[in-house]
Length: 183
Image 1 (cartoon, rainbow, N blue to C red):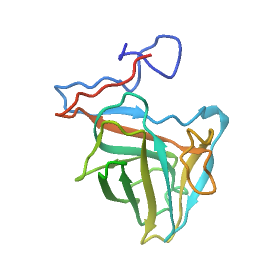
Image 2 (cartoon, rainbow, N blue to C red):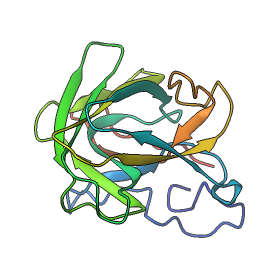
Image 3 (cartoon, one colour):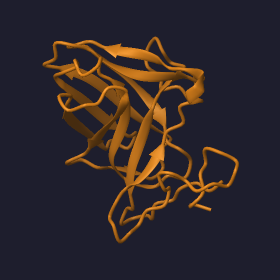
């Protein structure tokens, strides 16, 4: 049932809902597998002027248009500044690049990144490829990463078995309806 959670086995309601409300035009929020939160996380620090890249798996059955993502960051108690540049692409050649100012970001919270142009269709891809870069900053930003394995890890050089905490924002596509896997 798409109204129930995939995170627990107690048949409870999903929060946030896994089902889109077509009358609202809101995207469905879909978690990328990142392991068990109680296992602890380690920060991957991105210093000013540096970048890292990797890829993450798309949950099986997710279809539609990717209109944004959210990613868990640590901004050193509000000291992180500058602009985070995200480049995201699929293996069909669709890509987008977004510049997100960190001045209003919250420490240890999800940073919402909405694509103003260049939505990415999710049709038959297994993974999305990303590049994160920090520009015009005087302080670093941290991305919380959880230990998984190389298959589900985000293939970040030097940290291939770690997974970032990412949520996909997916809307229905006019070509193919959004499908969310059922438990």
